[in-house]
Amino acid sequence: MAEVVGPWRRLRRTLARGLPRSLRGRFVLIMISGVLSAQLASYAIWTAQARASQLEQLDELSRNVAYSVASTVRFFRSLPRDYRHIVLDQLRDMGGTRFFVSINDHRIPVEEIGRGPEQALVVGNFRRVLGEELGISDARVEFSRPETLRLLNNQVLLHDLPPRWGQHSLLMEPLSPPILVVQMALEPGEWLYVATLLPVPELFAGRHWLAGDRLFAVLIVLFTVVGLSWLGIRGVTRPLARLARAARQLGDDLDAPPLPERGPRETRETTQAFNRMQRRIRAQVEERERLFSAISHDLKTPITRMRLRAEMLDDPHQRERFCASLDELDLLVKGALASVKGLDLHEEVVAVDVVALLESLAAELRLQGGEVHLDGEAAPLAAKPLALKRGLGNLLENAIFYGGRVEVSLADGPEALVITLRDHGPGIPEAQLERVFEPFVRLEPSRSRHTGGSGLGLGIARHIVRALGGEFELSNHPQGGLVVRLRLPRR
Image 1 (spheres, helix red, strand yellow):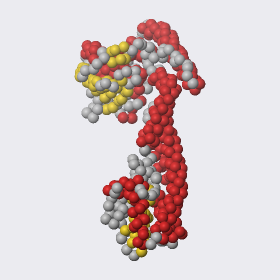
Image 2 (spheres, rainbow, N blue to C red; image 1 turned 30 degrees about the vertical axis):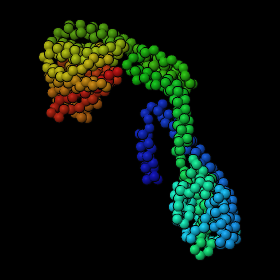
Image 3 (cartoon, rainbow, N blue to C red; image 1 turned 135 degrees about the horizontal axis):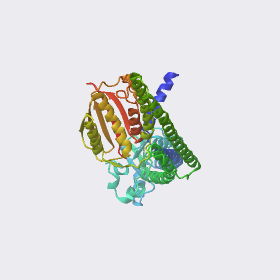
């Protein structure tokens, strides 16, 4: 069973990769496939019915002509041999009949045309009728084009004869139906030649599935159905596209106005659910901010009282240790509050000069003894300036803290701006690359506020970059140090 399911799943995946990405494109593809399938099926049925009707008409027509040819042959066989040419000359002088008849001293070769069931049907009817009516079983029944038909002993072409001799009975201009030629031996050295016209112009034309008129009808139906379907599908999928854009921008702006709730019932219900989700997320974020602010405010008062009491301790050693613990506690409270404020991205999106922003941050770090090298140019980027400054500042401060030196390179493009930061510190173990984003996680073993940091910088930076629609990657440089790669899209 697994051997059957495996290839089937692979086929489904291959077909899925070939489908359009958008719902609108898939709807149009389904409509085109449906219309083409219906058209091909209808034309297949129509062609089969037309084919059967044509064969039925050809069967009746060929049997009638076969009986007429048998009567003509019976008449000429009944004539004395010397009178046969006289009768033929009189018939030609009178303008001929529906048949061209000649008596030759050999069988005239015919450049035969026609294959398939039509030719077999006509030849079979003629041989059966001639056998039943005249007892002839060796008659040659062939088809020829008017342009290559030869008639007499000297094998003269049909178009070279006088019109009254045979052209009136064997030509149907401007059409060119095939000519049926029947030759049989009357006596040794004497062959009766009978040529007649089968008035079926497209007898051996074959099947043309994509004939001009059929192709035109298919295209008219296809364009009409696809055009009307496109208008309808566009109206249905437009609210979904608007909903998708709003979902992508939800992390950037929670204060965006709610989506209009209109369209089909399913679309309205989905939009209503999205608006409710946005209101709940906004309420939860606001509640979280109020909670952290209240906790931070409430903790500051007891920390201040404890600091005052610690200053009153007589033992200098105990006083210093107690104050250090209070400083660390105060740093944690301030870090938590800074984390909440850092994730608050309620700003307007404006054009930010990223190069100037990085230069200003680098100038501040140089004053503190850090070494920052900036390389590359970039056009202004649409972003939230304070959030972007906080994220880049955290990354630069982290790189300077661990490596003392950081190299920043910019690679600008029409789709996105890529910022790469490389420090010369110890790097991060591969197993810890994801853990460093957790709040208050510090890989540096020291717990001192002067050496350990708060463990929030990388998490805040990644959240800000992702909220701006970007990508955040961490990796270790082969020559040592940590590499941070930011990809910020141009919107």
